[in-house]
Length: 335
Ligand code: GLV
Image (cartoon, rainbow, N blue to C red):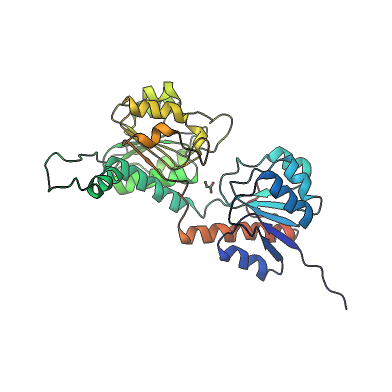
């Protein structure tokens, strides 16, 4: 009797079952890295060489380059990255190898925007610092001058990068906090601006032609650009100096967009008031000076980490694989 050979998928690390089940229900054999850790490049290569997989579900912690694609071999159609960012992938090399790359945009927009506000509010209201204070037994009763913070309402929120997440942050800032949003992006979005005119017709979400203008005016600056050669160290020592000394910087995009040493020095020297960042220049390492400062909040790259959103990301990565292996264009093909 003829048995159709089962197509094989490699998953580089344990992910939510929702994604694995989707692949299994589509009739594929799924092999997951049995150790719950990032595979070093040589380990990933040896899995791929020995397994001869038809697709790989990969993570942003996997560096996907020409050597990896070569090891994957000609039968491998797609690497589906379970992340919206794909700066871990050498796209040119994937094209040369004839391998498709997909990402998971859209499903994490609300969650990352929420985490951005969690950080913005936490640094402005000194939440982490106050928690440390209370746990250290320093709270001896209400005080009129204790742990005074800063309001977000009615302030100017500067957005660098008005993609899906940046737009959602601007939306919440204007609609939820009566703030004014100003943004810089390589592409101006006039349609977006039209949605934010107040009753007098004055714009509540306005374009600025340079990042400097945003940095100069904003009370809070939130970064939402992809990591590209042009956005590496977008925030450096010179640009930090342009910001108001009362301003806060928030980053939920990619760590290398900020010169982390320059940020630590700016925070130590009170060039800006505070920062809250979810991503780091050399993950998982964190610039040691940042760990000593009270005017920064650090979260370990968890902006998309809610149960529901991680399920959706895993499912979407699986859907991209299923489409590719069915001869269709994956819904989130990176072109
Ligand atoms: C997370 O950082 C992602 O790119 O999805």
